[in-house]
Image (cartoon, rainbow, N blue to C red; front, side, top):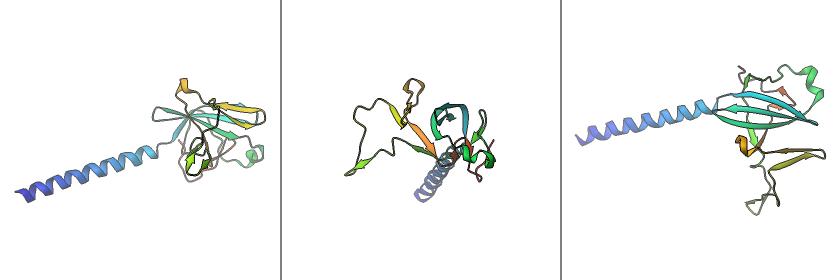
Length: 145
């Protein structure tokens, strides 16, 4: 009897583990919905949403790719991005991640462009991605909806 109970508990535990892995993989592959695209000087600011979270993506304007771009991102469309956090890319000294002194929640992208976080809108980080060059979508293998 104990042996049957052990087998039953093991099967339930394995089933729950597989459900968690499937759910995590499903959410990981959820594309980002483009909500808004702004331009500030020579930078695009793209607001994308996934699972009730808004991401602020910054991408340098690149006019050289426009004529060869097959997919220009558009508001209302979904794209698979691999986002990289600006906070996670902070410099590390002796194993300690450094936060800028006097940090105001803004990043200086060039001499005339400062882009800020928007905590009141739930935006606590800025992101960038290798999947965009300007507003040209480069990820050919990922689906677009």
